[in-house]
Length: 174
Image 1: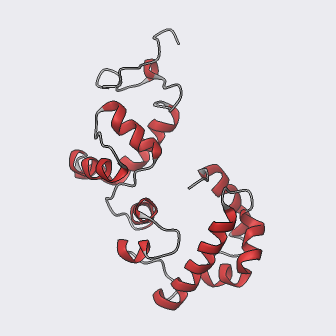
Image 2: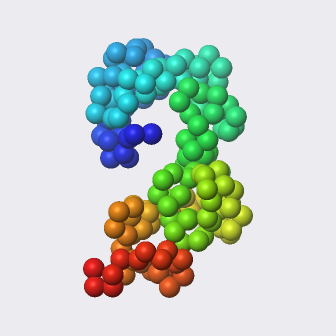
């Protein structure tokens, strides 16, 4: 939350050469970690959660990230979306992590309209064919970031404009 992928990637490029395991990150301590992630939004809370998470990973999971959603969500600062990202990206599980981009695209297009992210997640898992579910999360995020943007969607350049249910399309000449 409150961090872009670009910002996180920039911070990890600096952090990981120094500390790339739970033990090494824990050894930095909260203040040491903050020096590497200060450019990320809410870095104080994130540092506290990451240090606590590293301690739990070492104590309860042998320094490994668990592959179980409940165990992931039990880690400080980890909610359902983050747990789904880990399960999908790190472990190849066909789960759907719904962020603001996916929520917007699902509602605008009518693919999986819902009032909250869990409702959208549940609908997406039902309507996306199993063979596409592993990668669908990434495709939908990219579509939301670069085409179906929040403020000014590029409806004229959209490959699914003819299927879309979004009524407030940008003008064709835009």
